[in-house]
Amino acid sequence: MQRHTSHPAPIRAALATVGLLVGVGVVLVGVGVGCVGPVTPPPPARPFTGTALTVACPDPAFARELSSRCAAWAARAGATVSVVPQPPTDAADVAVIRPPELGAFAARGELATLPAALREPTHPLQWGRIAAVYQTVVPGWGAEVVGLPLAGDGLVLVYRTDRLDRAPATWEDVAEEAARSADGKPRLPPLPADPVKLLALFQHVAACYDRKAVADADREGAAGGLALHFDPATGKPRLEAPAFVAAADWLNRTSKFRPLGTGDPVDALAKGTAALAVLSLADLARLPRQDRAVLPAYRVAPLPGTRTFFDAARKPVPAGPAGNFVPFLGFGGQVGVVFKRSQGAAAAWDLLAELASPAAGRAILSNPALGAGPYRIEHTEPQIWLGYGFDRDRTADLARATARYLGVTVSNPVLALRTPDQAELMAALEAEVRKAAAGKSTGAEAMKRAAEAWHKHDAGMNADELKRWRRNSVVLP
Image (cartoon, helix red, strand yellow):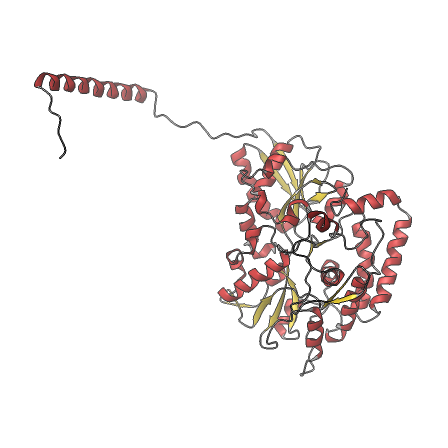
């Protein structure tokens, strides 16, 4: 039973007096405070007050996206940020560029290294949630990380369900399906006029032929495996390797199932002149819609693999039923870098960390107009891709396709060429690939001429410097 305490009358009177005095004190304190106005919390810390940053971003659409995000960061940080939609000049503190362009700046020693604090588990960047290849490889040079990913690249296969029952699992299946066309119509889209898109297709096919996809290679082996175009030990070109010849032959073999000339793959799908096409995520956003929903005839599937791959002895080895899929990454997307010359390097890295954060990444990938691809583990979740206008099942298909593309379970992906001379080398390669894709030369002939062009280029360069570039570009010292 609960007991109640009772005090004698004198004690009760004393307690009442004390209570009155305390109450009066509180009132007086309140009145005193009121005389100088209400108490307000101190303003939030603005750690970079007075800092001015210039961000160069040659991609106009991405520059517009960054402008509002940089303005929000600047307001909180006390800084000012100017985003200019042009290549970086000496006035730039930060550049947001395609990964292949990184090597030109890194080889000259112009880029600052990523601060160790950004890798801490407690940092809002959540470094550990970035896919491994986008942690140290795509933004890496030699043994250093010199950038942060702001968008990945991404390609998917889209097919019309009124012309195909299911998506092909291998590139060989694509060729055979095109050959089985019963109505005499082309089943493949025309070649893209854009050299980057044609080379992306070619190199994706070559990557799958080049090696067996490995799920559990050690880190050293996986890093060495990043090289596709050159032998990492010697720096010599590999364009006449069986994988490149096979990829060029595949383009040659399928040329008869494409319309002549170049064209838009989305337009070919819409008109029914193509049953399937490889689309970038930006192209995917242009599929025909009704009431903002993509028409039900279009289905998304992962990029195919190959039925075989070549071993170290250059011999073909059969792959499993699902094909051999090796990711080819870093040809597109966006990476942010900070220049050593910047007087506001700490602020610049803080800005990039926010732009690469989980929240910013989710927002950027959710905007189909940007065509941004995945670079974080959570970017393979279906809710990221709801903005593309598919129903629930097809959104899940898109999420699976991006997960396979990112290759989170594959430890030996290959990397796009990122050396300072990559533009010249890729132009020479594209010219020969296009001839093979137009049916004007065999794969072996095309790769022989491309290799000759690369050797001629190398003859006019410093051999030691070339080797260093090519090793550093696949994050080898």
